[in-house]
Length: 105
Image (cartoon, rainbow, N blue to C red):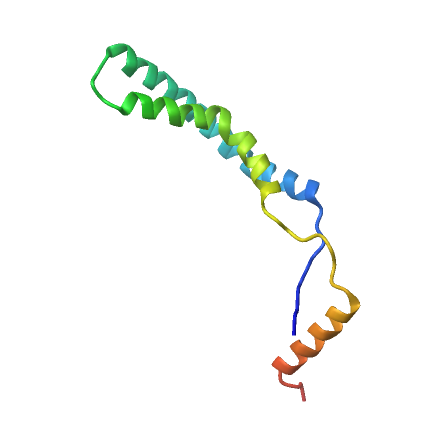
């Protein structure tokens, strides 16, 4: 018995929802990224023998430039089936669910 539950969805609506919920966090991350870039440049200018400057620069650049577009592309990378179940699959699923639930008296 092969049962697949494919649910249609609106891709644009999902994308708008993710952007709306992540808007406040993205602003905070971009500000934090700017602070990390500034700190990384300052540590590089002071010529201290640490790797912290390059880590700050890398994470800062990721927060400022990479987080927003990565969020948009990651939504399309997740495979969500768009087709609804066929009538035969719905009937097969209904009989399967009916066998799992006890009959109401």
